[in-house]
Image (cartoon, rainbow, N blue to C red; front, side, top):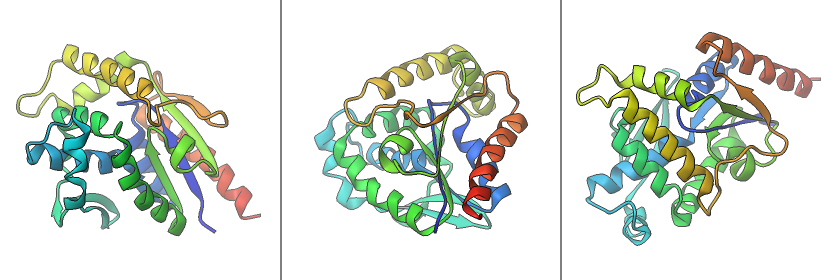
Length: 226
């Protein structure tokens, strides 16, 4: 029987990095659901669609085949056979992903794929509504967060050396806006599940955060093996 770990939290909390490292350490499959929404957003932007208009996005869904492939233990995101792993990490795609993820048809489009991966593997899946909607019966639910300022600083350090990198102030403003958009959307808003463990990484290093999450998961794993 597979072990499912759900990690939710706001943008920039380090969910993807922490979950990926923890999964590698434990031999689990890491599933970045945010990457799936980003892949839809990327395709829609590339096709010239207005991501703020649900009908524009919905009509493109039949054209999109998102896929997660694990190559040498590393997750790659493909859209219609093309590797878009780097292309989906821009600030433009990030904001667009927040908009498309609020569209019920998009959520339904990706829901079955996420459930299938969880059914067939020991996984750590992160996103905004994993513990509340996608995997409500997960073996462990974690709500990973940090202050907006700490998250903005981390995100800025990731982006600062890239061409046309945003300023710290722009990154902070984007995070605050996305927090509002994600937590107030009508469909599957960002919130901590009632039975989720809160983990605030504001004052933790990446290594400390990873070790904290691994410790939580090992307890669940050991319990399942008894």
